[in-house]
Length: 522
Image (cartoon, rainbow, N blue to C red; front, side, top):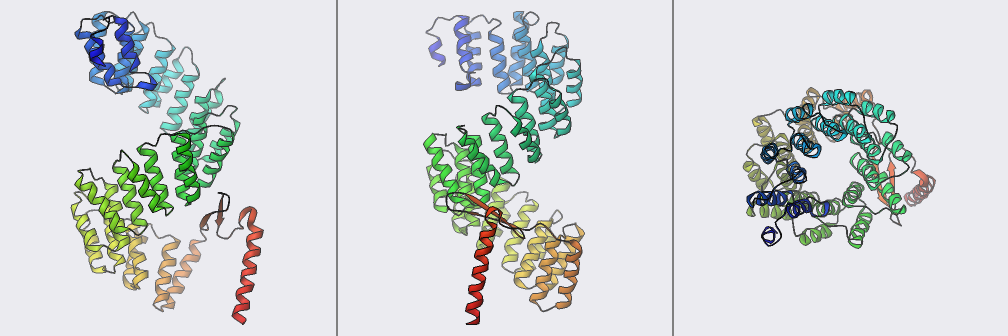
């Protein structure tokens, strides 16, 4: 692109147009925009008050503080510093984006011609830096406010700090609201997991945008209500709203949580038909879904079709193969990463050690553990789980004793679970004591210890554990989810009737019970 400029009419307008082109939504390349600006200066082309706002926007997009300061100096030399509000706002915005709020404030305070954009830039800068004390002061001083001003404050209190009560007070005070203010408030509730309040606001919206639907679908998916996420996704489609990749990702994740393989396959087909870009994020999410739903072959096919893969992609493959009892293959992907020179992060090591644990690969797991430079408690937990599954309790205690940090609840929980498998009463009691010390002795711990006593015929111990369980009280019943004919999803909760089909299910169970009784009597 740059060589072509040499053959064109070297006017300021030409260069401005080229710079602006590289900052458009469809062709964003701020680094190229800055290179064109440098070429413009070298060729002796004068910059005007249109050039500098574009160039400062490019600096802002890459958080280029050094580049921004160079442009600031050029602005001072060119004499546009005091005379043009767009140039001054460009400087304020650039410093805010680079979190240089003291520089922004000096420019703001010394500028007598500031407009509403100037105020909103400063307000947004403070909110982005989570400094809502200064943001509130500035907001109170504003000579006028628009919907952007209010939305910035709601975003700062709600999404940045999680102070949704403050955010809601401001939201309720607004005389007029646009989709941004609605979505910001809904997203604030979703981020703290208050999906009831989020849904109430969502239902009140007259004009729901794709972003509104995406916030709700992702909120339900991220806060353990995947069934509602898919229900809302289908409702969105019925309103003829086409999802984008962000909406699709939340829906695929919901399928993964539910184990809804058929629904996940349908989404994959929908993505292809509607030509939603299958980038590395979408493909990785698909792999994760297929692995969690048991579709290993489909996960492999997606992985093999990818032109670009990152550490997360490999991590999802390793983790998925591990939980699907394909430990050897999981190790092969790990070794591929090593041979390819990819950076191995903590999550990759957790995944591969878990795969070794599921497959019973003790020597491989210990060897991989030794490669970790600074193992975390999660890595020790995976290694302990591996050794416990193989019944190597001597090594377990040695490793625990060598840990540079205190063992956590998950680690001692793994030990206790292994004691049930291997009927190791003494170590089980020791693990329960440790869990009690660190506050991890929930009802399930004593139920597990009761089973360990029962397996060994120690009925006094069983009675003691049951007394503790009674004091601990009843916990919420477990949930199961199945896909039904037609692509729907049904959720069952222990101790509760099965929703709209509860009567039918009870009738079938009753009939099956009678059949079993007849066969037993025969």
